[in-house]
Length: 491
Image (cartoon, rainbow, N blue to C red; front, side, top):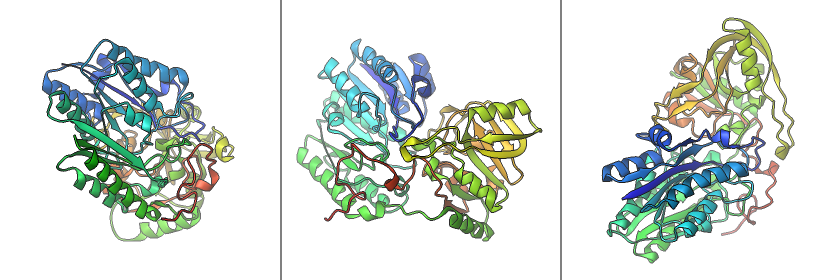
């Protein structure tokens, strides 16, 4: 048996000013791709393990994943698609794909659907397994051009490998003649706020429990996709897909049960924040309570894990004004500032214009750097292996990374975007998060993977950025309407 397994992943925020060239994917090809992801908690890692267990010949033509940002550059999209297509063209028994599900390319609003369409056109009968991110914006084009779609059931995403193994198992069982998968899908006119999508919280917790309960008998896989609301495309929003063994009616019934439950609970998916100064005052109160661990401050409107610039200084400036002390802040992505701090050197004082290097025209915001003075505490290469439950075993690179200590706040400054879902982000630069009074993270939900176990309390800071939960400042031109909560809708 010959299998092709590949990873091509990007969550596209169409409101983001951050470009997405090929370099942002940091792609690896062939043997390097295979080695980088073998044994990791990723769908691709799961596929590699399945191929080895079968003794199958495996081709891993490409592994490429970019931090969320603006539309994917056309040439980058074509290069990554071609890598997969060239491997499939050489012949295989099945294709196993680790995709995101919310990629928007410069010339294709549905990047995954277009890749799958090309594979089907090249090899019409080839079985295709697809593992997709929890934030997939599912489309008819995706469903029509593959055999099995399975998504993560956790947010933070700690079950990525399991989703890949489930998708791969369905297709491999089909090849062995053990199953005849049929797939049905649907959506509802709703775009849940990402801050209300965590699978530990209601109403998503109960919706995922229903999906798990449905996976019995003829139902091989049942997935709810919360959707990615910051992609202004027609099909953005919540959806469900179910695979059954030869029973289309069972697949359809399970799909509708999931969608009906989500629609009934739609009000619970709406996020409401509070003024930032009020939130900081509440954080002070939380810190004064008995108990160990830091108060987590979430700068959620500028989260690079959803396409934020990661250099907006609104929340950090508010913290500095407030008088909070013993704070670690991760991170400001500012290559220019990193170079200035490296030039100053460890142990030396520096005054720099930090962050605010990117304008955000989609929300009418001009970049505004913040003058910050402090001592350079650390300079590192920013590379480490993730040890926590999300992306376990994957080596990541933040680029050259520095720490500027203002006295009250230790600010991590990186060359590249990186979301803090792992404690290694701070420990890599010599900051022990469990010893801090406050930890400010530019994150929305993924922080929970590493930091929730150590958190004393959590306070959201509604700063500004293109990952805002305030839909009123985002202009949706392509999104299907009416849709909740942009439009009030009756049952």
